[in-house]
Length: 301
Image 1 (cartoon, rainbow, N blue to C red):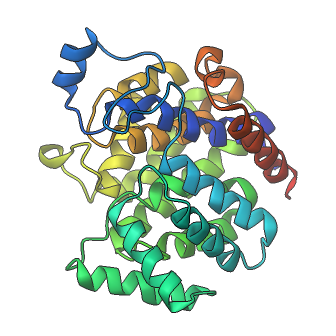
Image 2: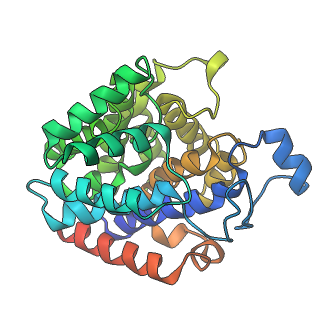
């Protein structure tokens, strides 16, 4: 079945919207957000520990766009192109970069990594350095584009490879693959059946939910937790806007949980459901880049 272009655009745009909405709330608790802002945050307010401008994106979207540009440049062998963009971004001095991503990119750069095997070696070194603590959501946050570009089998394979460039833990890869499968189902749906879409999301993420527990389900940066909190926000609401508001106001790793939720909710509801007051806050250049990359992906068979 052909791709739903509005949902492809919604998925990619949704990542940036969720990232920007959540960025000012990162590392705050839900209680701190309510006390500071007089209730849940519903608009692009800016600020936070990174002192972002209203609508400013962070590493979540920056890495997502690096992945997308790398795939568009060489879809048959995207890892070298993605890796080069990761290193260029790292060298640009981004405002924020996750610890696993920082370490893996630094190792890969020093090693002159130009293929998947060398990137995997870099990720393995980080895994060993951290005692296996590489199940964070730094891979999950950037994983939307393979599902938008490729068919089912190839999408999950490529998404898994891209994840392992920096995060080699099985739990990270499991979350990435479940997310990819869910987005694939959503963007090939044309009937607008929201409840059916939610069923597909829940079916695909069930194996990841089994890695979490209610007692430890926190917005703490662990990839399975991030994915399940995003899904729970979508399950509990009936619009893109409501899902994003619920997700980012959890606090913690709010920009990343927002990005994950935004990708799924955008693929579920489509770009037309994204509030214009949010979309209009994005940098014009970023918005154009997202539009161009979404069009490229929608054209692929």
